[in-house]
Structure formats: C-alpha cells, structure tokens
Length: 256
Ligand code: NI
Picture 1 (cartoon, rainbow, N blue to C red):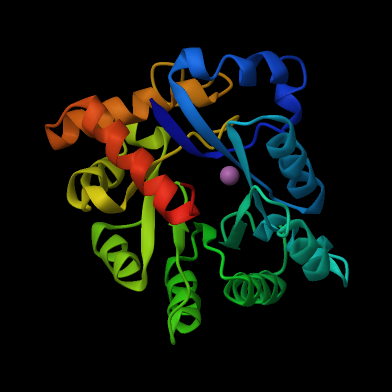
Picture 2 (tube, rainbow, N blue to C red; picture 1 turned 90 degrees about the vertical axis):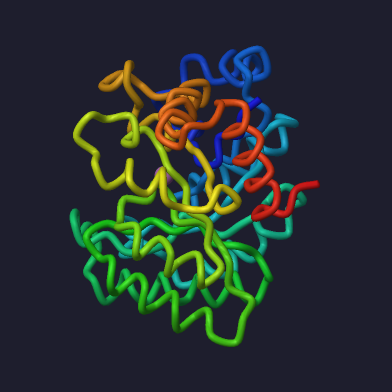
C-alpha cells in the first residue's frame, strides 16, 4: 500500500468522479491521501474531504500564487481550521519566483507568517518552492532556529546538496512524477542519494502526472509509477519504497 503525501482532490478536475475515485483508493493500493490546501477555499474543501472520508487527511494554507489575495483575518481562519481533528500540517506555503503570480515581498510576508503559525500550533509545514531556492532555504533556516520547525519539501526539484541541507534542518524530501521523466537527471540523483528514512512520494494530482500517463490528469493511484522509478534507481524493491515512504509520511504528519 502507498501513501500519496500531496494531492488536490478538491480540484475541479475531479468534480465528475471525486467520490468514486476516493472510494476506490483502497483497491488501487492507496492507504491514505493527504489533501493540500492552496488558498482559504481549497483549505476548507480539504477539511471537508477529510471529514467525509476516513482515508483522507487535510493540510491547510495559502500558496505563494494566492498570497496577494489573502484577507486580513486569513491567519485566524487557518488557526480555526487547524483545530479540526484531521488537519495535520500547514501548507502548501512557500515562494514561486517562476510564475510571480504575487509580488515577491507579499509572497515572503505570507510565507513567514504561516511558518510562525505552524510553530505556534506545533504543526509541520508543506513547502512549495520554484526558482527561489536560496531565499526559501534562508527563510526556513531562520525559522528553524530554536527548533520546532519541521516539514516536507513538496515535489522537490533542487540539488542533492540542498536536499541534504533541508534534511539537516528537519525536513523530509517528497518526490513526484518528474522522477519518472527521461530528462529529469537531478530528480533521479536526488532519488538515489537521500536517506530512505527521509523520503516521501506524492502525486500533486491533478498535476505532474508520471510516465506512462504524462499529459493526462494525475490521480493518487499513479503514485506507484514514482515509487517504481525510485525503487529501480536505488536497486531496492517497490515494497521497500512503499513501506519506508508510508512510515515517513505517518511520522512527519503525526499519524498513528
Ligand atoms: Ni500541490
């Protein structure tokens, strides 16, 4: 059984078959799915999914794309949502200087505020970073001082060296569909190099569909292709990857 540590099943691309898909997770070898918020609306939707379905947990937060649209009371709303039983982390939060959908100073402000919130609530964080590697690292390093910060680098696309630095800070590294792509040399190096006890797998569905379904809508069950690619790169069995990544997901999200 696999755990999909990062999915967006609230996305409108699942409107037609969401329930069927969730109800068939088990027969598709998926134990649990962590559904990740990207703004207040999707955070609330994640909480609703977690309430309705036993095998879904929720993560709440505001993505850097949406940082510019937060209302003054957004932290209070996230704080309230986090009191729900199956809310297990704050995310996805971070910096995205590739799309720059929000001004960078606002991205940084909203990122730091949510890191403080996670520390206040003693919850892990789920980090999104794109074309902002050094600044993301610097902000996390500062936030990690004095302990308490821990989390996941979601769909990690940086170097092996940087991955090791994040691990030292208390982070786990999550790999997604790109590790199955022919041309993703660095992701393959990361898949080989990082300690198995710090590795997670994810789909980020409906995005980033692994081979052989690249280009189609992604779903939790396709996480097995990412696991197979990692197993092959490391020279271990898929079962070992499934077991380690499931244990790691439960550990970092605090699930018994
Ligand atoms: Ni995501």
